[in-house]
Each structure stands twice: as C-alpha cells, then as structure tokens.
Image (cartoon, rainbow, N blue to C red):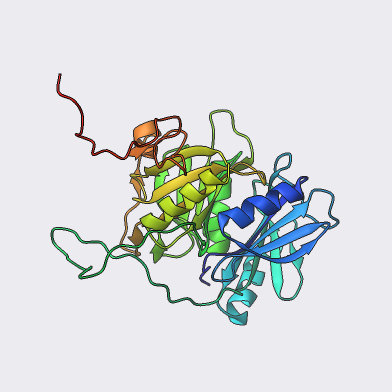
Length: 321
C-alpha cells in the first residue's frame, strides 16, 4: 500500500467568519458553507475543512481549539483502501465508513484513509537558469499577485511519544523517515519516492500534543513571494519568512492562522527515492532556516516590515560625503 499524500484536513475553530476570510485570502476556493462548517479546495481538489468546535461528530482534538482535528490520507484505488483497512483494523478508535476508514494515532489524532479525490494537474511553473543549466530561454520568470495553493503538502505535530507515533506511521501506513533530530523529531515521507516530508513529528523537552503548522505547496519560489505579499497586504501577520530550510531545501513563508497555529507556503523541496539515507541533525536556528526574514515583507512597500518605503531612486544615488 502506498499513501499518496494528504487528501483532506479538518480544523476545529470557533470563529468561522475569520477563518473564511483567511483561507479565501490564502488562495483556496470555498466550495460549501453552512453555519457549522466551511469546505475549501486547493487547485487539485485537496480539501480544507473548518468545522465549528461544537459541530456534532467532530473528532476530539489533541489540544484546545483552534487546531487540526483530522487528517485524511490518500490512496490510489479500492485495493489499497482494503489493505489500509487490514492494517488499521483493531487500532484504537478504528472506524469503517465504507469509503473512508481510520483510527486514532498514538498522539490522539484522528487519522483517516480514502481513495483520493484529488485531480491530476499540469501546471506551468518557473524554470531556473543556473550556471550549468539554462532551462529558461527568451522567457522571463513569472510574478504572482497572490498564491493559489496546489495542495496541502505536509502537516507538523508536537507529539507526546515520538517513538510510538513514528512506529505507527511506519508500520501501519508505510511511511519512511527522511531525516531526524535524534530523540527529538522525525521528518517522514509517505512513500519511498516523493517529496522530502509529508509529516513531521516533533517532541519537545516537555512533551505535549499539538499542531505546529500546516504547509501548502505552491508552484515555485515566485508564488511563495507573491502569496506572502498578498497576505501581508490583506493584514495577516507573518510568523517567519520568506526564508529557506536547509534540511528540505524548501523556500517558505509562515503566517499565523485563525484556524490554529501556523500555515506555510512552500516550494522547491528535495525529491527523494528509496536510495536516500536519512541524516541526523541537531536542532538549532541555522538548521531550521539558512536565512529568514523575521516579521515578513510589507506587501505595499515590498520591503521588510517597518523598513522605510522605497524612494524611487537608484540605490547608489546618494550624495558623496
């Protein structure tokens, strides 16, 4: 059985109106709306649901709302779903709804599996010219006024028991460890071949369960920047970014989300195969970010937040002392 990434996530939150505005600004499409729930979609049909904390049937949270209540993983076909049913049967909180099965992971999170509802996409993305490869000829790179995320690319949780939670995803769902903070964190991809991580589990010195962030894949670094600038113009607060992760090589921009914790635009992560050997890292600021802008970039001035607005002069157009 191969998990094919995230098909759907559900947040629990009380302020649905603020979440509605946020995710529309984020670039998702609103597909359904009731007083109890909002259902958004990304470009490929990956769903982001925001349910009112009091909605009947909402799985229990691993921490107080707002937070992520449920993650639904994708498989390719009914045969793979049948295998997932066998692997998850007997686990705590096991449910079988026919087209969706699941259980509760060791961290208390509702984990589900279904045949994917995402749509295949062919997208025009930026090409990069390096010294050794000139892939972009007679063609400027794009600039984006805003982002339209492709899908939910990964989720990151604080866990109470790193070893037990990692073993669950390895043994029950076939995940693979890509890189490690020994004893502290595991970056995991859902298949031997794929992007650097679909799931990151992080155990704090004083372990607790909680959401760290949800990450949305966009086309390229230019869309990370365009999306971040748009969110800034809309008045949403940056936590960190733009910046670059050394471990996965991805370019990122994190924003504070009214649905819980943080959300991230990212692009250009490493692609791995079964030949990849997991590496060990010591947690630290230079390992998390090769470089990053604290507080973000102002969407109007296009400069770091609180920096002076551009004057229109060339940078070297200054009187000589």
